Amino acid sequence: MRALVDRVLKICEEVSSIGACAKCGKCCESPIFLPEDRERICKHLNISKTYFEKHLAGRKPCPFLENNICKIYSLRPIVCRIYPFQLFNHGLFLVGVGSCRLATEIYRKIYDENRIKSNIVKIPLIELEKFLHIKGANNRHMPKNKKF
Image (cartoon, rainbow, N blue to C red):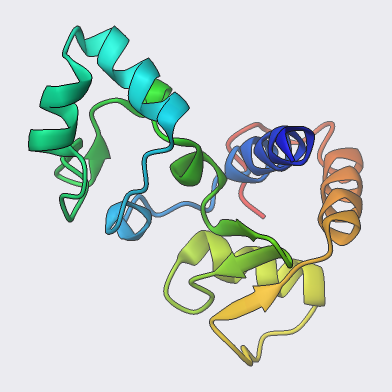
């Protein structure tokens, strides 16, 4: 499972670097901190796990979100790193289609259609990898800040 999570993380970093994120904070509404996230954040902030559990975990929106900016961006939880994707036992899903600009752009590019049928869509990992491979090949000589 960890290998799959690492693969999804790598793909999501590539997708996010494309530049369609509006920094709206929708991905920060209900944070989920995995044990490795908690440990990494506590260590970096020099706080105890007890303090984290009592004062930070479970808060909505995320306690590290300020003016739609993540105060711990380089340490952000895995769930945040893969948004607008969510990984479940039965596959990888694109969420927030229609409400998240990045998710909407990904949906439109992968499925080559403008009409949105659902706000959550199962995405075959191979399709996402093909999309990124094609996108990367097409953008080699384009400016880095160029959006889709």
